Structure formats: C-alpha cells, structure tokens
Length: 370
Ligand code: ADP
Ligand code: MG
Image (cartoon, rainbow, N blue to C red; front, top):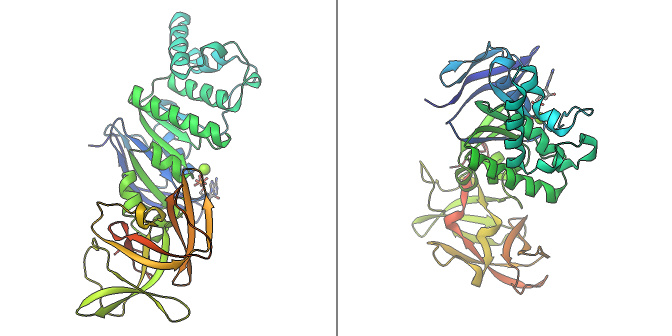
C-alpha cells in the first residue's frame, strides 16, 4: 500500500470540471512532482490534499486512512506556498514557532525545535530579524522552516521557487533536494518548470487540462514520453518533432522525411516501437531530442543505431557548455546539441549523426507514442 493514494479524484467548480479523475500514489519518503502548464489544475490538486478545497468525487488516503473529510488542521500535512505568507511583524523565530505556540507547545521545546530547523536550513543567524530584512531566498527558507518544524506526515510545496531569480532558484533547488535526502520526508511538489520536475522528483506526474498525461520516473518521462504533449513539454530545448511517413523499401519498413522541394531522407524505424509494426504509407511524427543529434565525432560510440544525415546549418548558438545547431528537416526547424568546441558555421553542409536508439515515433491523430 502506498503512503499517499488518490483514487479517481474529481473537482468541479459549478459545471466546470477542473480535475477529471486523477489516480495517483506515492510511497513513503517519495518526492512526487506535479508538473504542467499554468491553469492545468496543479494547485487545485494540491489544495484538495491539504484540505483547502473540497473534492467533488473520489478519495484521498494517507497511510491507508481516508482524509477527504478531515479538517485541514487534523491532516498532519504542512504546505509551503509561492507567496511565503510570513507574518511581517514577527521575527523569523516567531514565524517558525507560531504554529507550535498556537498548539501550546512548551517554550523550551519550541526553542529546541527552532534551533534544529534553523540549523538544517542555515538560517540560525537570521532568527531575530523581521521578514522585511530578508532576501527572497531567505524568506523562502523561513517559510520552509515553518513547515519543517511541525514534523508533519506529508509536505506540500506549491511553486515555492517561482518568485526567486534564476540563480537563487537553482541554489534553492539543490537545498530542497538535500533536505529531502537528509530528512526522508514524503513530498508533493507543484511546479510549471520542467527542469525543477526532472531534478527533484523520484516520480513525476504530468498534468494537462485536469488530466494526467503520464506518471513515471524522470527517466521514463524524458526518454519514453507517452504522448506528444509530454514529449514537447519536458526537455529544453524541446524534442524535435518531425512529420514522417512509413514506407516499404527493399523488403523492410523505413521512415521517409520529405522536404518541401520533394527531396528528403530515409531513416530506419527506431528500435523500440511497442505493439504493431508500422504499415506502408502510415503517417507518423518522428521525435528525437537535440542531444541525440550531434556532429560525427560527438556521437555516442555505444549506440546501436547511428544514422548520418546531411543537412545545411542554419543557425549556430553557442550556449557555454554546449552549442546548439539549428537546421531544417521535413520543412521543420531541427535543433542539434553539440559539444562547445564543435566547429560549425552557418551555411555549411554538415553530416549530422542521429542516434536512433533515442528516437521515438508518435501517432499524429491520437498524439500517442507508438
Ligand atoms: P495551476 O495551479 O495548474 O496553474 P489551478 O489549479 O490554480 O491551476 O487552476 C486550475 C483551473 O481551475 C483554472 O482554470 C482556474 O481558473 C480554475 N479555478 C481555480 N480556482 C477556482 C475557483 N475557486 N472557482 C472557479 N475556478 C477555479
Ligand atoms: Mg498554481
């Protein structure tokens, strides 16, 4: 039995269904990230777990016990919001201890707990300051301290880093990951940032329009996206998605990618197509991530299937650690990820190495991976 279980959860506002039957579970000590575009229902789902929103149908259980009808204060769940919601007139110590004080925890015990949490979050030197005297990252830490000090069964985070600047967001991401590793807490974390999802999660749930698109480990979501939405949403730069057609050639099925001029390229069908083999003439979407397209020397020597494809370099974007090289295939922009020292010029005709071990194929009508 999983620690957190969500069965067929539906949430309606009037006639509008916001969550359309969510089934999800999480083991104790797991880190579940709910990811999806703005407005897809992430906060609503988190709020139903916290008890801040009622559910219309379904059940939520923690450690086997239904919690739907429990008052939020009885759920033993702590939540950290995007807006830190600190009390401006209280010190950091006061903010962290407030909940304990309300519950009548003795002063000595409170102080010990504050000290412990402040040490974990490295804010011991800030305890007597007011929130206005803190940076955004420090405020975020205090908000986490307030949740942590309660030692709840479950932590919920709603986009806790989205108000921070890019550098601080990366630092805090590492801290949250460390916090999870050292405390072993069970966490449900909401973000619209796919990199946060990939780096933090033990399990990712991708949500779109109130429906789960895929649930899996970060590697599963990244390498074998269930559909075009997940493929496109996860990963930056995004997966290249190119129209192609299956064709019978010399007794085997290949993929043809045609360009506007009528020419084109032929590729073998990527190896791991599940289910039915492709039939002659079938339209598909060929998906390949930028890092699976390199120059010849950058290609993975352990790959089973590398295909060389000649194409003209359109744009070269040095990005520090990598260089992104944009070309065109099948009338679409295609991005390759090369080493920073790859020597590439715009206008140059280049053999690109396609690692087909990493390629996937989708049905254009359903969007599902084949
Ligand atoms: P996310 O957190 O993924 O950005 P939300 O869960 O906040 O999305 O919202 C999901 C959808 O539910 C949105 O379309 C939003 O407008 C709608 N919604 C949220 N709260 C309410 C409410 N109290 N009444 C009606 N609609 C709501
Ligand atoms: Mg939200």
